[in-house]
Amino acid sequence: AEYRDSAALLAWKIAGGAALLGVTRVALGGSMGLRPGYLRRVQISLAAFPARYQPEVVHAELGADAGLVGAALWAGRAI
Image (tube, rainbow, N blue to C red; front, side):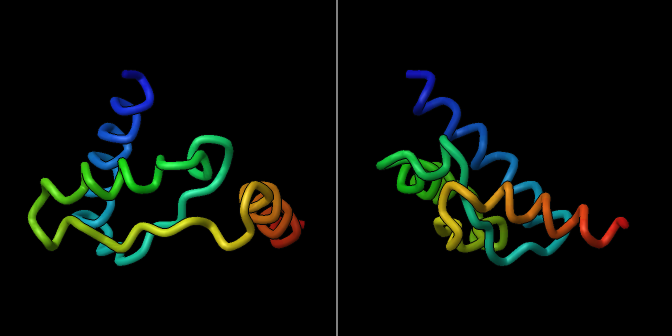
């Protein structure tokens, strides 16, 4: 149940980001985002929102290392 609930809550956050910031694509990575079936659950939950709140949701291309690579790039710019 927690797995399903977290996908629905994440869909709420994604919909809010789409509405507020005009986000058109969201990449899910990390231990939860790459879990089999999780992306689909988020997409199903997101489908309950109006179309303008439904950005494309995809798996992070860098897989489980996406967060690590992003943090390293950000840290490199801060130096």
